[in-house]
Image (cartoon, rainbow, N blue to C red):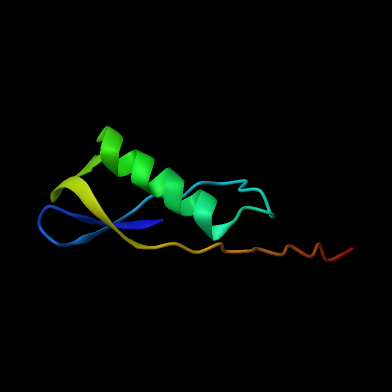
Length: 66
């Protein structure tokens, strides 16, 4: 999740293990809650607006090297 802070700079919050079925609406509500609750702050001040959100998937393939 990427927010804008009081200085207008971007601030990221990364959450591991997000449910695969999470909706855009759910993410938006969580981001609104973070902003309204003033839960986090950044070097540029409080988080004041939503910028963007994304889900990043990582695949790991073990290789046998014996």
